[in-house]
Length: 161
Image 1 (cartoon, rainbow, N blue to C red):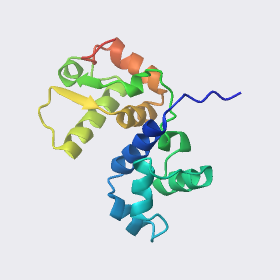
Image 2: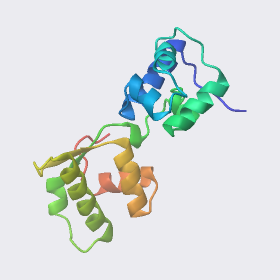
Image 3: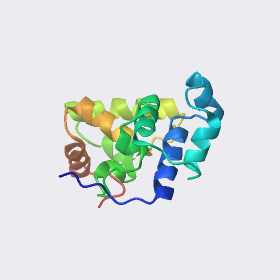
């Protein structure tokens, strides 16, 4: 049996809007990028709870946004996994660790790339997003929980649980 977290229509609508905004699209851009398949007025009415969204339409919209249906509808787990918390890396602490460790080298290169992409050169701390932790986990060949545990064990987290 599948357990679906209870969500109000307003929460589902807010999740849909959040996904659209995370994709960096306005309502008009959704219409343009979908070739008119998804009309701006229709998407807006879903997001305002003015129109009911069928399962068929929800699946189609999730496919358009290229996200899982549960993400579009805000049905992700309520549990606070490390990937859902704000994670702040202490870059200074990384410079004091042994340089021969492969995972440490991966972390340093990863942090450097993130800083470059965000034009964030303070070099002391770095806030990473859930997607950043997922990417780092892939690079380190670990799951997210193990990556978080490794960061914790090395003293690289500023916001420790």
